[in-house]
Image (cartoon, one colour):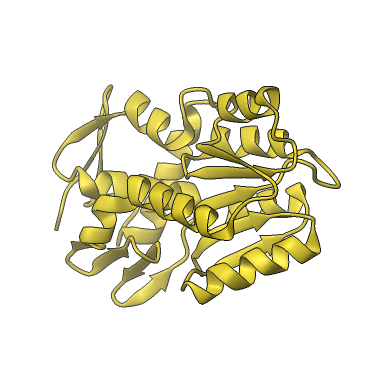
Length: 227
């Protein structure tokens, strides 16, 4: 199931307050108390935004921030008692979209969350459904259905599918797709894109070996053809 917000915070009192407040505002929240648990959750579940503490009991939040940013482009807001200029500069340079020093106003946090979600998903909020005959992508819940049956996609597979559908009929270069989904500073090999396209075809194509939707444009990239 898709999640709106992943909260990575080891302070159980503060974590409980934030989670309860955001859920009362209508958000689906997953709370992890360690960086490793947060990263593991992100590997298997689509998330719209991450709230990230820096002082965690295992790996520090800066490392978590860098790992998240190397894998995907979702908004990251750091919330930390380490609020000096050097820490804020480090967090922002590692890819955080905003940085809030503790203690903070829960109302201000909510406003920043709404701002980041609006900035990142504004167009999707206005047009939440992407359709191609029996294939439907609900960008509001980050859910995908084929013949009205839910399909379980990884975060990368989902992001690739949305990009392809949003640009149906256009040939998208491999480098452009890779940079958009993995980030320009990602250390993964570009061949990762080919692997993920193959896995995506297995899930949405009637015959993955003879794809009708995701076409390969040899020497260039891929093009999504609507049925």
